[in-house]
Image 1 (cartoon, rainbow, N blue to C red):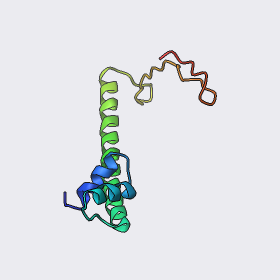
Image 2 (cartoon, rainbow, N blue to C red):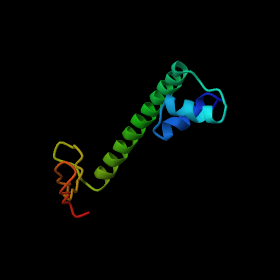
Image 3 (spheres, helix red, strand yellow):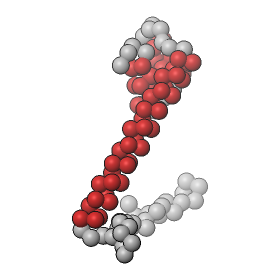
Length: 103
């Protein structure tokens, strides 16, 4: 990773943006990338994250399908069946009061 991409990446990992990067770098008296350059690196990295995420989702789906077929979890048309379990314990809340889920 180059010297400009690294701080943008670190800023993204911490959920911050260009303004926070500028403040941190300013406190250390280190010049930083412009907002335009930050946005370019940010968008470029997001494209890579998205491509990687979609690839991982597809690999996981294929593995789930393979495992379902291996144990016979398929319907009469050969479509894999996946069992999903939910505990239905979503929180009820009313404007920051009365949180009632037992968590």
